[in-house]
Image (tube, rainbow, N blue to C red; front, side, top):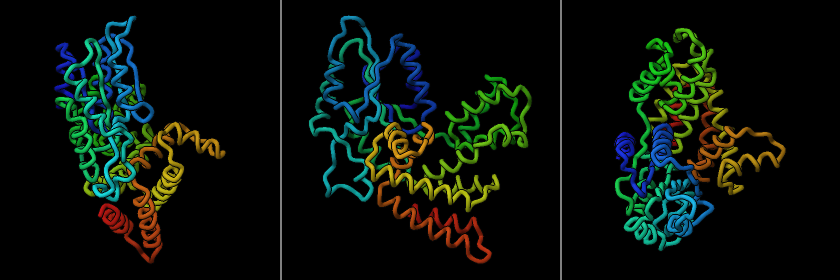
Length: 350
């Protein structure tokens, strides 16, 4: 089911008693969340599958409340409810993504889906993995585990063209005047992340003047950094095509590629520390580094946690080795920076 189809059901008052939100795209997931909360008119409850077992969550959903006839329960990090896979079935990247659930939990979920508690809306959010690259097999494993839930809602990433169309729609609604070149640049620089685009448009609405391609870098100064994170995310999925698209965007933005590589090195090294410390959330990342005397904003901790979640320990170590080789090649006599970086992307995604 697409987010638009789910929103249509909610609008008609047909909120499913149990749903699965599958995929990383955050803009439509936020819209679907808000639609469910508005339709049910109750304060949502949030459970973390990392901290609470699936059986305990189902037991809570079964419990009838004396004070409310309706409940909306969101279960984040739903991948953690999946049981561990056998070593013989594991791949080189599965060891970092094994769940902690019990083998019988799927049966508990199946029994609940067949007979859900009246008035309870239960939504599982599995947002760790994407539908492309190496994540594809993991998504299918998650889909199979939650197979008792009919019609999972798939939150797929926007293409640049889709993001540009949504950007134009939001700009008209917010009365932001962007010329076509500025709109295309914004969509590409933010990696077609519509959630981020909506935030930047809200800021641009305060400018109150028409915005061209020349003004855009001054009004959205961290757009290039966003493109680098798109590159990191694509590399983590081993999505070669998306990674090369992000690299192409950096080249068009005239980003100094050795500086981008240095940022990647810092990101990989710090993510490796997160792995070795066995940190399981952005909050744990922030607390760990602050205890070490390193101040860290919440947004930075989110970025590090996202990178650590994307890469296995072996992938980070291999990535650092390839970064060293790319840095050496960039320092050689008369290097072609773009060719060196493209070679680095192909090797890491290989």
